[in-house]
Length: 139
Length: 290
Image 1: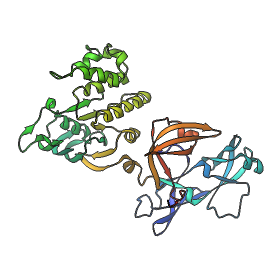
Image 2: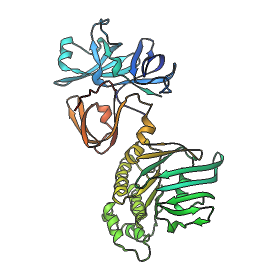
Image 3: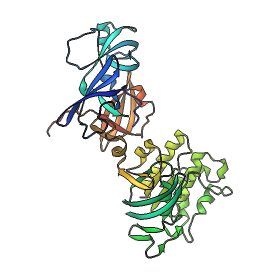
Image 4: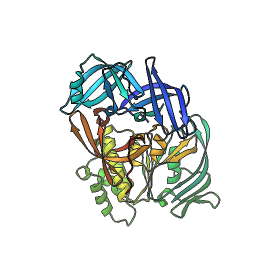
């Protein structure tokens, strides 16, 4: 099923760790980006769960957290180094486009947070996404 | 209920092929016949319509035998209550819209049905026009109306929308859905368009090399195991409102309206009335005992 929208990082499965009905899947997106996602699937229930299988990691724009600290001590498993490409501000919410290696992702943040962190175009930031917010689509 | 249990040797582009089918279709269903070119989809429609003899097997519709090779039963197309719409309209070029419909009337049939169908399919202002002066979408509406003149039980559609542009296609899909419900039809449509299947069909029959390889609801067929989100529903878009840098989409799921935050790219090809899959991770919802 083609999903033309949402944040999408294409890669292939590097590792699958399964316990019961759950698996944590590690996806290699680029040499600098690995994504981890938890899914209610196992290699037994979903045929695409095998090493090397191409998949897309998909997540909503509203699930992106930005940090100006390049190495925060934080439990979020996905930390993606990006550069701010563009900023579109609303009164409550702001839309930030981010260049992360080859991929472009979008974050929707509170406008207040943007001011607090003094985010600007061209700035390096870390995009954080929790492992339970990432869906996988098989190719 | 349509029961079709037939075997037929066909000569496909890739060589000889055995069409071997055992299909059951409940009354009132909207079926999508899906599969690659040469899989046998059009042959299924033609055998149901009586335009192609299976050679072996049995076709039973609403308890009545239409075809039975063993007992040499083979109803003629006119004896089967079927409406057929083809991709290329197949209208009479020298007859105007109204006369094209009237031509389909059976002897002693009340001609009032022609007025009704002209109104239902929005052809009132075009009823005196010749087919050549109509757009593709308009011609296909005439073909649809004509297929319904004899009040068929089963409507067969062979890629009826594939020659139309997106706007006309969407409009005709709405007409198809409307007449399917209004006239309580069992509709079988050959199509390759997955969006169209989600919008119209409640059941998909997937054919490959003359055999059914899978059947199921569109959501099951086309999204299960492809998207890991476990919280999936199909719904209908009611409205889309822009709010600052995002959009608020109201979606009707069964009898409940849910509101979903969406981005510009998500709503770009969406409009009220479109069917959508609402998907989320199973980790997001909370449960509250009532």
